[in-house]
Image 1 (cartoon, helix red, strand yellow):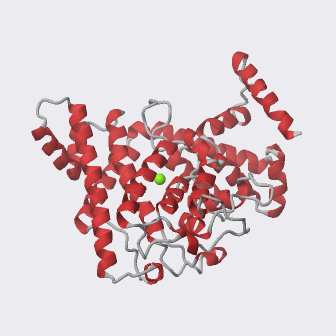
Image 2 (image 1 turned 30 degrees about the horizontal axis):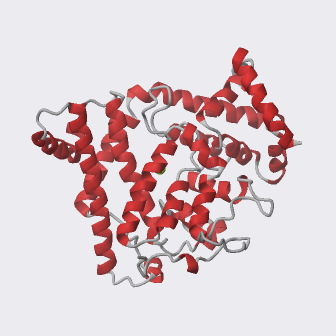
Image 3 (image 1 turned 120 degrees about the horizontal axis):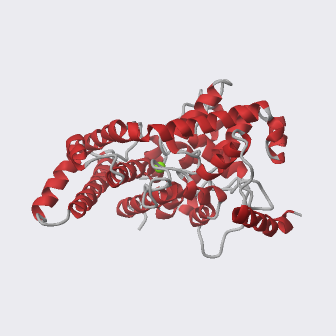
Length: 395
Ligand code: MG
């Protein structure tokens, strides 16, 4: 049951290269499937969210985070009568532009680009991935996604000014994005705020007392769960409290957005686009809870001394590799030499690094900066086999 203000697949502004309709999948379902089958999506599995793999196999990585965001976004979309296929495609693609090593990686890449008068932005990078870098089709470069998915990639988290980004003019920068895109950023924030409390506690970087003191919204949930299950194990009370907080925030987002849509007299998608503000949002009191929780996470987790050494290392790896390829572009893979004829070298190096997984960027750093030999023994045999399996396709 699609609401009148939802995006209807049959009204899509379409793809850059027209394609025949599919017999039983609509355009947004096809876009969702294209994202899932892309290389950039598979690489999310080996990209850091907050904790690197070194800590434990139980923590979120960018892929499991993405799946959580998708689940939350789908639930909200269903309740609001929005287009679930579009929401799914947008949620699955929302983090593909992130470089290796999480926020530290992003910061290091941006700093390296700033030295050349350029910058790194993960939304713009995601657009370049789906428009250009993914090569799966004989007929065109990129994934040839619909306008609405590309627009959502650009607009899910903030508005770009048309003066500053004239190259994005086709994305209707003076209008609000559809509600399907508006809710992605909120689903993302709800997903990571709750997940990072969970992983922070499990990693013991955050103690229970610290969380109870720093995140009052969680504390209220925890005390209620504790009163209900006084003899349950602490871990289970913790999970119960977290689950309730997540549920309350999602419920609030659904109700508050629905109320705002009603109060604004929104009848169709054109009204959503023309409205001066974004309509999807939490109520004032829950928004405050979310901000408190986020501030606490920044203070106690993201900037905690426990994660500092790892972050410093991540920044160093990226900085050194960036400088290396800037001075020795001949060491870039052949396909990037061609690109460097058309674009600034810094952009080409940045694109190359941003696409890497944590593992691959570390391996490249070992090879080019630390002068490490290729892996020995069994590893080498596996790599050779992998190469032999790949090479017939290349010829
Ligand atoms: Mg995210």
